[in-house]
Image 1: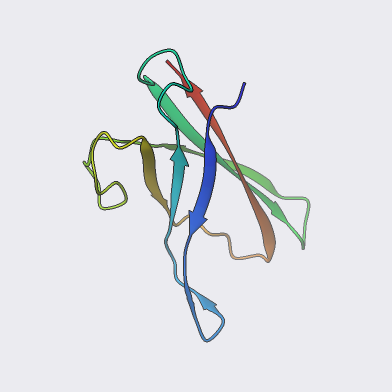
Image 2: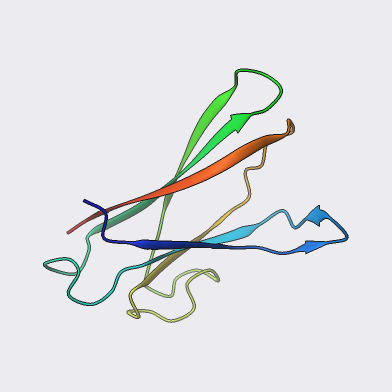
Length: 99
């Protein structure tokens, strides 16, 4: 069951992507029985040039320990992603929450 809403924030300058985006999963109070013990995003890459597919697991945190997560304990689990591939492709993200 999915308990998280997901946003990906990034920016671009003149059509050139910034090499880091922040991944956020918002877990509303009461949507899981207790404080989540595990929040992980999976970034899926599919090349548009070849048959290459890659999955990148990312641990998301709500403890203020990284620049991606500014406010600890606010229910927004965050982390940066910057593992872009050299081939043109598509990226998709899913979130798994346990706790």
